[in-house]
Amino acid sequence: MTPPPSALLVLEDGRTFRGRAFGAVGETFGEAVFATGMSGYQETLTDPSYHRQVVVATAPHIGNTGWNDEDDESGQIWVAGYVIRDAARVPSSWRSRRGLEDELRAQGIVGMCDVDTRALTRHLRERGAMRVGVSSVETDPEALLKRVLEAPGMAGAHLADEVTTAEPYVVAAEGGQARFRVVAVDLGIKTMTPRQLARRGIEVHVVPSTTSFAEIAALEPDGVFLSNGPGDPGATEGPVDLLRDVLGAGIPYFGICFGNQIFGRALGFGTYKLDYGHRGLNQPVMDLRTRRVEVTSHNHGFAVDAPLDRATNTPYGTATVSHVGLNDSVVEGLELRDESGRILGFSVQYHPEAAAGPHDANYLFDRFVDVLADRHARGTDAQTQGAEA
Image (cartoon, rainbow, N blue to C red; front, side, top):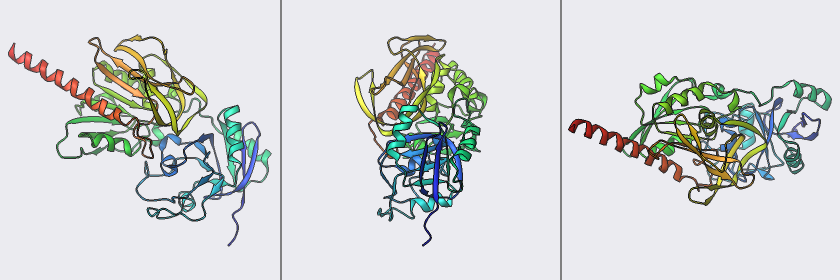
């Protein structure tokens, strides 16, 4: 068997790593980020939030479970590249249909293995996420560095429209008749999210990121959801304007990850880029209402700039920070209450759908159902009182 070609990785600050090709042979560019999950690499690779990012796996041994046909979070691999240390020689899971490298190669994803990922991760943690090039066709670090410096950065990138669904589709409520109808705006939605809603009796209408408020209102939704997704929330205007219309109409809202950042902007808060972000399955977050600490799944490089110690008056009600990351006090959730004190909208920066786990935050989908039920009950009461009058 012909050995795989050597591979070269060059960061934008000139730091160089060498290894061998893993996946497709070629060249790729993106933002170098590290993910700390010890499992769930298939879900990571197919998460649209990783669009234009080269993911470095901190777990030393990758590929043991191969690749199956059930765990994809979208219709394709979205990462720009994949960097690992030790590649499993033989998949050992009974669910595996082919090897990880076979799938990377089939989808044209350039990667590399035999890399000192511990040193690479420490460098990114100290210097921050940065542009990177990975090549199994270029051997000159200076030549590759030149192309890295010509590649676009993540700050200022509007990417949701590149990963959204081309056409609307419906995920039917499980268990018979739907209790509620929710419009989910796809900014890079993962497969598990509408499934979690459908399991709770919600009929989910997934729509493209460019959908107008008039088109959403025509569906007569009980609630609106904004998904996770890639890019800089500060460069994303359409969904912010859309969400302001949703909140102004009094429609209940739930957002995850990018949907949390868009929520923050709609409420008047700013956003900023984290030095190296949060990516992994083991991030501790505190629910400030219950003081309960959850172990959560994260994938974000930006965060909301909102005060942790006080409420903020907005045109739609009173906004507060509901969750905070315990590692670095980053805002991990927002809550909006109307003038009556009831929840109108809420969001979290992490992933309660977490297909690869953990599932500590799964209750948030039930919370959304409770908000929908409360709004529905109040609407029914108002109609009854109007009829009696």
